[in-house]
Length: 225
Image (cartoon, rainbow, N blue to C red; front, side):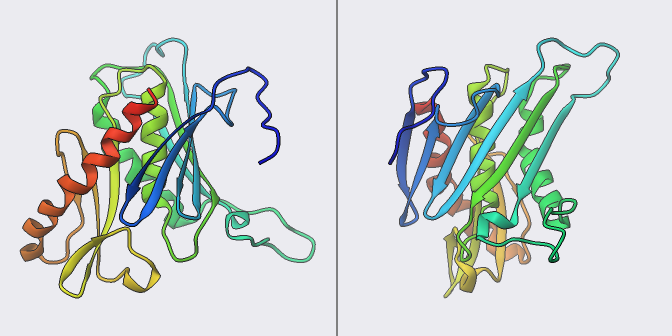
């Protein structure tokens, strides 16, 4: 790899673990120097940049927590250029991107203390995408790890798994051929679960799969804090 542009002289910290047959890597200090915190998450050929910005002081007169979570998927992540011959810019976020942003927001928001009023912005940007793998759960891991580095009272981390039923057995992080039927789950260290399950009789089997898979994902961000 060539010379790394590092204007602030920060150390590049990399931690990794083997997860479901692939290497999951979290990297801090390579990009995103103007943010409160940034983490690059790599899983196979999928690369997601999670960045966070935190306000310097609480916003007065606000009766809700000003947290915004954005998930950005650009065509360049898959090596494509959108638009016509003359218009190359991309339009507004797709419905899928909006839903993934809400999926990341849902487990993160309750982990901030009640009455916290500093503005927090979280952006997960897909830099490179494996066509056979959905990057949304990697985006959740990157966003959670970035929040852990900001110093905010965030009682995380959180982790996400895309779980599917393959040959009668549950499998995490499916490829394109194994995606249906699928179940999406989010988990914290306290085992607070949110899931979309089509058949209740599979719920107890999915619960047995989550703790052993998610524990490694929740412990990884602590190694970079």
